[in-house]
Image (cartoon, rainbow, N blue to C red; front, side, top):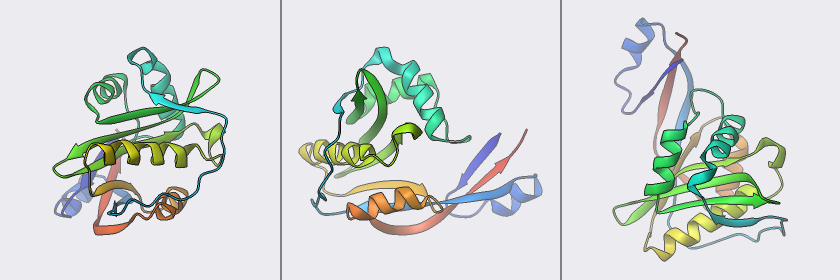
Length: 178
C-alpha cells in the first residue's frame, strides 16, 4: 500500500488520477495549559522504553494500528534514541502501550500513542498521555500538539478530556493498493 498525507491540499487531483482514493483526514490538536484530568488506578507502571524491546513494540504497534500507519523496527529504534520522551506501560513484564514525544521549538509534538487492543478502555492511554505531558512540561514545552485521524472518535474523546482542541486545517490522507 502507498499512502500520502496531502499537507496543503495541493496533490489530491494528481493522486486521484493515479488511482489513489481518499481514505481519511488527519487533524491536529493542541494543548496550551497544564491541566490533567483525574486518572483511574491501574495495574501497570510507566517506564522508559528499552532498546531490547523493539520487536515487542513493533508487534504492539501493528496490533494497535492498520496499514499504512504501521511503524517498523528501524523507525521505532530511532524514536527510542531520539525522542524527548518515550514511555511504555508495563503490565507484569509485558509492554501494553507506548507513547513518544519530541521537542519542536518552544513546544513539543506527541508523535505516537499506541495501546494493545486487549488493554484499550482500561486507562492505559490516559496514563501514557499524562506521563508524556509531564515529561515534556519538565523539559520546558509550553504548547503540545498531536495528530489523530478525524474518524477516530475514541482517541478524540481521550484528547478532549485532557484539554486538547483542534487547530489548523485537516489533512487528507490518500491510499493506493500496489
